[in-house]
Image (tube, rainbow over all chains, first blue to last red; front, side):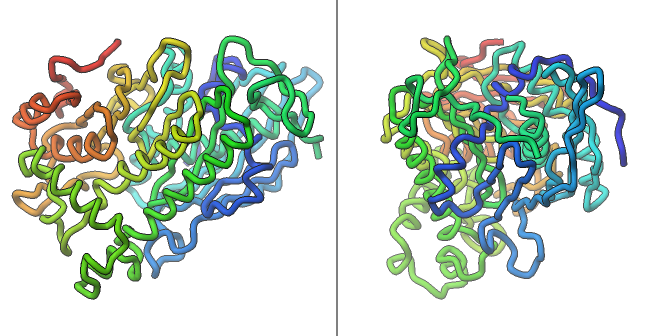
Length: 174
Length: 279
């Protein structure tokens, strides 16, 4: 279930601006109890997510709606031409699992492609086939249209944002 | 291991309380972004800090998240021991439940009335289920925490429904794209948020909206969007509109401050007269 690379012609600054997911607040929030907070450690290459305890069906191993991310055994690589790649967090969300690879040249994102992209059922796969790559496109369109948010976008796109942001953090792109 | 990356956030002033220098961000307010996993979905925050101390804004953000967690703990119908689950099973009387349960059920009754019965938590399988209203209500509550903390502007996105206040840029409203039901890389239109924008659709998870008149799944639009001052009602009305079809536009048109935009299964669109559409 791999997909062709999505070529992105955005400046990294613009992308991060629209996503608006920064890491600064974590250092202060870490001392406060906010169950279910996504914690991203910038630069260290680790991402962990703690789902709120019992936030879903008590009998299932994965609570509906909670996502979990594992620390990927990944590296940020730089080629002689200055092209960097990083693999984002492996995000398990309600209906599947997603991990993205981001390639940047000179601090600008040149491509985003899924490394892991699995859906837990056929319906989810059908959904994923257009719901995942779209968020980045949405982000790009949001820049051009000057949109602050999108109404009607849910689970899959959030997993996409989460993995993407982790990859951007590793690349030091803000 | 790469060295830690400097924070992207640039709260007010060139230095924070620890003396760390932030990057200046001319022309736009400092932005605090955050995602919180709760209520079976993802809630995102976009906070324009303004003149508030960065630490105060972060504390408010933490309190806003705690408010969401509390709503989940009280109202989750997935958690067998939540007060709401116990009420549904008849184990606890309403008067013995946490006070917000009564408040939310009052709002449910109001939403049922204002939607001409098309949003009806009492017609859900398994007994009264306020889930369709709680998410929006909790986002409103979280937003009010941030507003009271004095931040300049904020947006809370709860699973694709958005609650906003203030102006992200001087003089400008929060601009919200409504997702194209068939092409996720497009938005069907752009709206200026009057405080809330909620979209109900069946494109991600199939028919999941129950028609209260039949007790079975049934939707008459590809997506239904409602704008208005508060998300709890916009969200409930969008849900009701999705199953009501064309006639639903009338009950929304009759409500001061609430407007609707619908996309039919054939791709045609309809809207109420005062929809804050910008493109």
